[in-house]
Image (cartoon, rainbow over all chains, first blue to last red; front, side, top):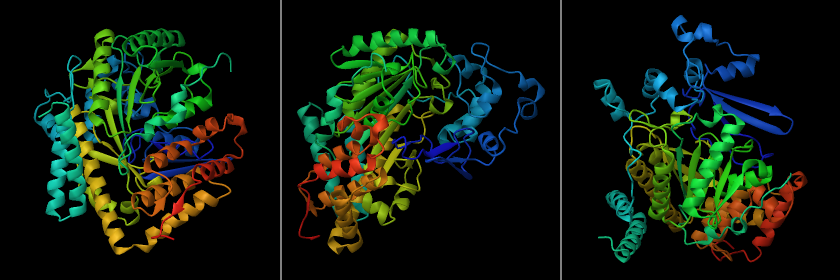
Length: 190
Length: 357
């Protein structure tokens, strides 16, 4: 579910994190639900199966813990914070770090099936379940980023611009490379 | 409100936006989430536990930055308007209007970063870069995160990376958002072709929807936080943003060469709206300011520089406007008129140049 427009009464532009998917259950958006209350208009995008849609249309959700989950699963919850499997499956927030351990299998399946990891990682997971999903830094690591990294990107874009004979773009990119290179020289970078 | 706190004065001056900026790429946001390993996420904590955690984080934050550079603002001591002001200033994605006791913010007095405490996660590090100093901004965030990790021990698992309240954010728990101003790509419907060729990034507008790019702003952000490294995220967003900005530059040059009457008309109308309207709602104002920025870049409009136009983008926001005018939330019935008057005042020296006159 994604709230698109809270109206201008509140004044803020609502900037959602996930534009093309229902944040409740993370499936593609198929329904746009618009609600007008006094002078406040809210526009919500969600998937057709979203429990939030059912709640909005009928006042209550059609999904219950008993009919959506099997008998064994219905009582599953995190022993530390009490977050239930149903809450996790419907995209609710997790309660504590322990939830990741308790619901690991569900989370991994959900993340892979809804495209929350790059394809290359999904393929690696299919080949080896032991492969961890995380590819970023560990707590004791430092990640530095230098202007040299930006120059590499600019050079790649420059190459593409020249290939397409976009000379204005190429000149703009060259100016940026020059500025960054001079800055790098000044700071003692190679 | 009892015992309320005043936000740092520098935030109201928005000097940040007057630094040397890139007209096509005015700002980048770096946002990183962390949770303390031994505690449940904020949604499961009692008020007392939230307060204890807030105090713990506050101590570490002030130790790192010092109380001169960074000011603490418990949420219950800020007015709704102040919270809205912070939300606008820092281009936040995560709403915190309902935040109360045990939640709050650490704010850089220069307005370069805000730390959200106990909102969705224990800590959200949120840096904005308006001066095209991507490396320095990122490195400051990374150094702070590293120092804090040594004191607080963040929740981490080898499988899911840094653990967050919303499983969609785990892994690096890093979002990099590049704000691109691309009016010609939007209006000449040339955006889709470029967007389709980009990898590992996704695109949205100021309101979140991809189909409607309010004020011709396109926000490029990393599509994944899990399964990718921090360097890969930084590289993907920077490369994608560079390509989009480059395409905008090319199209602008082509348009000037061919003398596109439609765009000239849009710039002229924006000039008219900004200097002669009696009322301006936020959409109209931002859209007109967008074409004003384009007019400045193409040399069609004089009397204002691009960084000042960027500043007006923020100042046209409801909370900024009310704060500048010294008005309170409840006195905002005539906000559209105030906005129009404010912009008339700020744009007094604005004029169309020969190409458009």
